[in-house]
Amino acid sequence: MFYAFALGRRIYLLHGFIKKTQTTPKKELDIARQRQAEVEKRNK
Image (cartoon, rainbow, N blue to C red):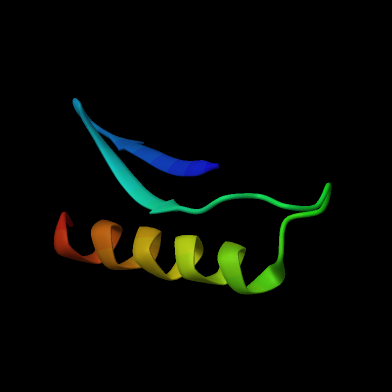
């Protein structure tokens, strides 16, 4: 599973992992959200 984020004309791959259950682990979502916040902060 990949988490990506588009900002302007760029697409950032935030996180990738192999999903083994139907639900997405909170840890994996937290990593992607943290990285998205970092990208947004750098590109203000």
